[in-house]
Length: 114
Length: 470
Image (cartoon, one colour):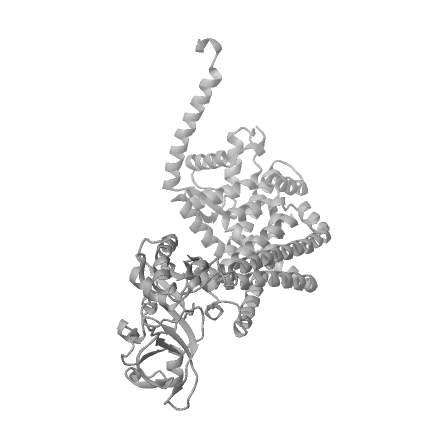
């Protein structure tokens, strides 16, 4: 998968999951974690993360406030809201549902259908 | 709910855009700084570390643009920006702007004025209650080629039709003439309208003061009566309500003022001051087609019904009144030609007005084509600018929108000027009304007319010009 192929919706889901697991993070942290988790298979054009963060914040799934980063710099920290957690659960379910269907199709062999 | 929340956020963040911009800048800077630090730790030389961080982040401007698109109300913002830009560009080319605006203003103005005239004359109904039920009773006489196609009524027809008809609620005849009034201040010659009983009732405009004529007022030998029009009442009596019951001398006969008609009462736009009862002498009705027959149809009756009915009554009339006095009565071949009162009022002006509107519409099309050409020439000279903007990342949609906004701005201003033009033109037209323009005194510019025609012409024009520009 090339990085440009990461669609906004997928990226948003990754952001939510990252925040869910790791707690409040700044933008750079989120980008790094996504890269790490995907084993650098997914190198996001890091800047594209910010429009996604904004959208999630506008929708109320995440909230943000200024804080100090690990090396004491001013950074904006994002955290999951209650609504965001609910959204994550819903989207996880729907994602699992979709992948289950797709998996079945991929596992399909000609004799299964006879 | 989500959408509403987002819209609200967008609105608020649009208002606080400066603060957001600052936040974004800081956030980006921090991000790049952290990445740079990371790269340094990984052993890259400082210059490369920052460069790599920037590369990894991606195009800051593009992201900012995407961010802004999410944040505020991008459509409104760019629209405002485009409009401002368009106005600036129009100001910088005064010759072009003046030419285009003048063309548009003339085209739209002429159409607006024309439509306002047509609206007031043809489209809006006569200002009587249920004017659609009013008909004018006319006849044709094929046997006598010299006579007009629309022969009116004779006094004796009044008696026949009044007694025999089956489709009229009210029927009466009227004619206009001069009269002389003496006994108040100076003697004068006001214009009088003579009506039989039935005319005012048929028209249905109730008097402002007093009462209509009754049947008794038509009877020879009854006391003389007169009604005043609003204008005359104001002019001669200063609008004094105690005028009812006063006696004025008209044509040497004392007449009691029994009523005043409201200002909106008029008949075919005729100038009139007094309304007098017509007293036909049944014993010796004059054998002329002196008077205009006017009737209100019974509910549900049509003009065709009225024609059938009048055709049925005509032999009765000829037998009773005409043949005894006039040997050639049958040779006249009298036939009914009842028509709606509105047609009577408007006459054959209708067709001419529509043709005129048609040709003026073509004028507007030509104006649009001219402006489109002007814009096209201008677009040619802008090729460089557009190419530059395209290479800086403006999409074709964005460029087209800019041009479109310019065309729309132009035609909006043109439309406004056009309405101004039309207003002035109509004022002039009403000040010097053409003698043969019916109802011209009753054609104030209706606001709805203006709005309708303006939006129509502006949008039509915009489409034309925009298509050309793209």
